[in-house]
Amino acid sequence: MTSPAVPGRRHRPPAVLYILLVTTLILPSYMVLPALGASGSVSQMLAVGVFFLWLAASAFGLHDPMAFGHPGRGAMLFWIVASCASYAAMFAGFSGGNDAAERAAADRWLVLVVAGAGVTLATTETIRTIDSVKSVTRWVMAGAAFCCVVALIQFSFRINPMEWVASLMPGFEDNGAGTAFQGREAFMRVAGTTMHPIELGVICSMLLPLSIWWGLYDTAARTWVRAALPVLLFSGNVITVSRTGLIGLAVVALILIPYLPTLWRQWAVLIIPVAIAGMFLFVPGMVSTFFSSATAGSSDSSITYRTDDYPLAWQLFFERPWLGLGPGTWMPTNAKDIFDNQYLLTVATMGGIGLTALLAYFLAPFFASLTAAHHAPTTEIRSLGGAVGASMLVAAVSAGTFDALSFQTFALICPFFIGLSGVVWLLVKQQLSTSLPVVLPPAAHKRIREGKSWTR
Image (cartoon, rainbow, N blue to C red):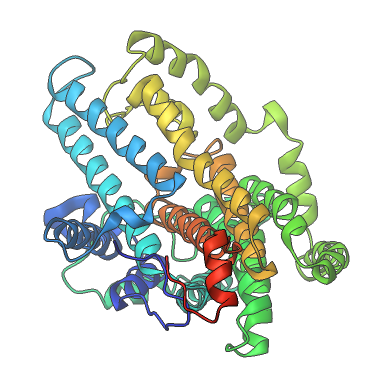
C-alpha cells in the first residue's frame, strides 16, 4: 500500500498541481474556449484533466488511493453522489424540466464537480510532507499576490489589467460573466482576477490564514515577502467593499488566532486594531461606507433581494424535496429570482439530499482540520490545521451570502482547502503512529538481556 508520507525523504508534488493552482488565481475564469462554453476556462480544463489522470493511474495500479482516506474525501464523495443522483433524476423526468438548455447547464455542473474532485484528490495524494505544503503554498501565494495587485490597480486607477491578460489568450473568448467594477456609495468595488468583487473578498479571506501560517514557518522565502502577503490579502479584501469579505475576516480571527503560537496570539491583539486604523487613515470614507452598508437593513436592495429569495426557495423545495429541479438548472428570467445564497440555490436544484451533501462538503473538512490540529504533535502542524479550518469555515459562512459555486475561482480553491484538510489529517495520523512507544513482550526483554536480537 502506498505510504502517505515517507519520513526523511524529500517529496515534490507534480508540476501540474502548481500550474493548476496558479492559473486558477491569475487567469480570468470568464475567458473560455467557445466550443466548451463556461466549462472551457484554462483552470477548469486542467482540473478535469488532473481528475482523469488520477482515475487512470488508480485503475492501472500506478497509484493506490486507499492510503489517503480522510473525512473531507468522504464528504466530497457524498457531494458527487448527490449531484449525480439529482442529475439522473432530472434526465429520467422525475424532477424539473428537461429541455436542451437545462441539460447543458446540468452537464456543466457535473464537469465543475469533477474538476473540484480533481483538485482535492491531487492535493491530498501528492502533498505528503510539510515541506511539500510550503512548496505548493509559495505558488499559491504568488497567484494570490498577482490577483491582489490587479485589484489594487483597478481600485486606484480605474483600469482593468485583465483586459491585457485576455488579449494574450488567443482562441479564448469572454463569456460575459465577469464584473470587474461595481459601484458602492463613493467607492468602486473591484474583482481583481475573479468574476465579482464578492468572490474576490471571499478568496482573500480564505487565503489569508494560509498566508499567515506560511509567513510564520516558511523560512526559505524572503522575510519581506512573507510579511507582505497577509497585508496584500487584507487590502484585497477591504477594497471589495464587501460585507461578506468583512465577515470572512472576522471568521479568520475567531478560528485562527487560538491555533497560533503564544507570541503571535499576543501580536494579533495589537495587529488587528492597527490594521483597522490603517484602513481608516489610508482610505478615507471606507469605514463609514462599511458601517452604512452593514446597518442599512431593509433599505439596502442587495439585502432585500437575498431575503426575498426564501419564499421561492421553500416553494421549490416542497415541490421536489429530495433531489430538486436538477443541478445547475435554475435559470430565472427575472433578476430578482436569482438566488444570492448557495444553500437556497442547492435546496432548490438538488433538494434536501443535495443540501445535506453541501453542508458536509464544507463542514467535514472544517471539523477534520481542527480535530487534527488538537492532536498535532508540533506547533507548525497545529497552526496549519487551524489555518485550513479557518478557510473552510469562511467558505461555509460565505456560501450563505452569494451563490458561491457559480463562481469558478471559489469552486476550485475550496477543493484545494478540502485537499489540504486531508494533508493535515494524514500528517497528524502518521506522526502520532510513529511516535507511539513500542511495547515489547516479556520474551523480547529476556533475549535483549542475553544479548540476542529480537524481531517481531
